[in-house]
Length: 305
Image (cartoon, rainbow, N blue to C red; front, top):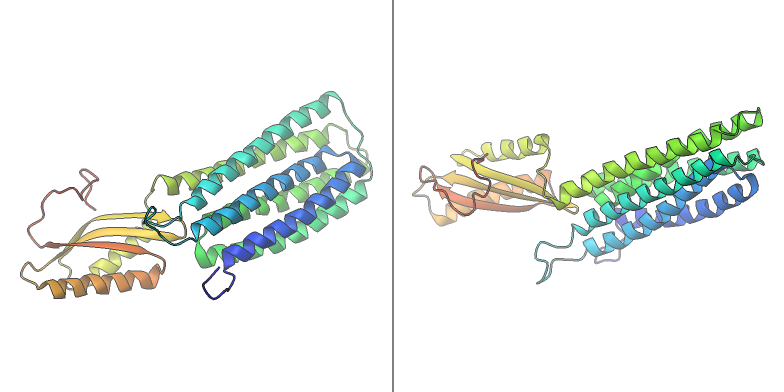
């Protein structure tokens, strides 16, 4: 939340997710109790996983929003990546459980009943999931929150899963074989594993300080080179830190330039970059042109671009 008490996009997305997933767990529990469908169970398990990861995501958003302090001078933004990594593990664990349940249904088939209750609950789930994903994607566009993005990915997958479940339940009405229900559940489990892999990959990218995409680096380079008083640049390094970016580079200026003028150049560059990346932390080192020496700042050996 902001200092004025305004609820920011990641927070209301987080609270909305918890409210919606609570409604879905209740509705899907009733549908599974009435129908006995393992496909409905797969959707219920997915929603239970969603509730856990949504609470974790909201907690991480609150923690990541804390300002920098004496012990965390870069802030707490990477907690979002930690949360997203745990989300991926929980989702993958739910998929493993679902595989075992589906195998059990292959060995001991259970007839699905009350198909229409299941269909109605799945339609409700689709509608609520679409509403939630719309809110979450707006929050991601506004802030770039990885925790909300991870939440949005698996809620978006719910829409696909629930449409499939409606098809399975409808097929059951017309006498489809019992094995089609657990077969679809296994498909859902592998789909959950695929979603978990994508979330884990983005989490590790942030935790391991992966460079920003080439398009972003190109934009930053264009801003640097657009300043006529910059005679050269090197050692551009970038990374994500929660919802912000950390951008570090060296510039080369006229050797006899005054310290004040050199500072003005770095200040102009900082303002130009912040205009494109409002949440960026920018570190600029100034070198005299023609007097570049190897030093401890040049940590990427052999790579000074």
